[in-house]
Image (tube, rainbow, N blue to C red):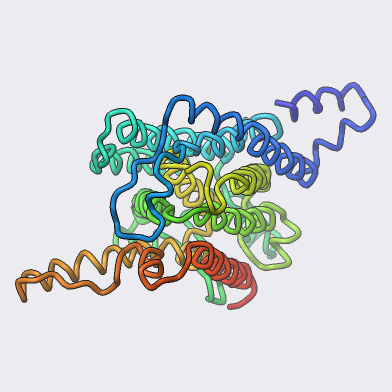
Length: 400
């Protein structure tokens, strides 16, 4: 909202009002404001959660020190959500379709996660929200995002086409199912390629494939983040690292000069997402103040489902969703470890009459705990791997 207020002041020729036109300035302000909200007001939220006795119920997993966490306030994801939403509302262009989608994603999955936490805490049901309802909520969000990107006239990319009249290449803004593909020279993949057999309907088929991809990616990354949130500060720190990377990618994708220099897809108006990314970074770093080992508060599904969905939708909007397996490699490995463990256990139980395990425990971070590694060491090493994956993701802008 402040953006529009200062825009009005600029019309009145108020000195200094024009600084709000700069994305870099508003991104810096969003980072500071979200950090302040998370650290200053986070303490008050934690105190309120303690008063309401909203504590974490601990399952006996046989892990050292796990019962010391019993009663630690959960639903701390509200701190993260508020620290993202408030700065974004104040400093971003709210009419921007991409900003709207990010806010919808944050609120939608935050509400879904809250429903899960509420059932666990107040209904004393450790299973939480039934899995099918959780998946349905994620599928619905993916459908909303996919259809909005398909139907909105504001969602376009810049493409170079040959103009026969001038016999030269010209830039045009157009709807497209093109996305970025890493490590390839032309750096582009068209979803309509998968439906080329449909002839004149190939483009429509491409959009159908794109929407399906959005649904699957949003659901997978959201659940991957949820599984990763098992150690103090693990998901919080990884999300901060991923947020920085996504902010960089959004800035270069939304800036025509950098896009031309890097020879990547230029997507008008995505630069505004840098403000959202800055708020995300500030919110997670601020939350880490209380969530680092030993945690004073857990984010719960209120935070973890929302953070995973935010990362997925953000990457999809800037057409970098095929970089998610690299950037979110930790989430992927955590997901795979659970799938491998469950599948192998069922297979061996059927074949040998006794279930066997690949890992000492899944998700993977619990495997290392069982091996005797202390929690802070596991978290920091996962962060280091996350930084390496983030660096590799950025390198793909030129490594083809």
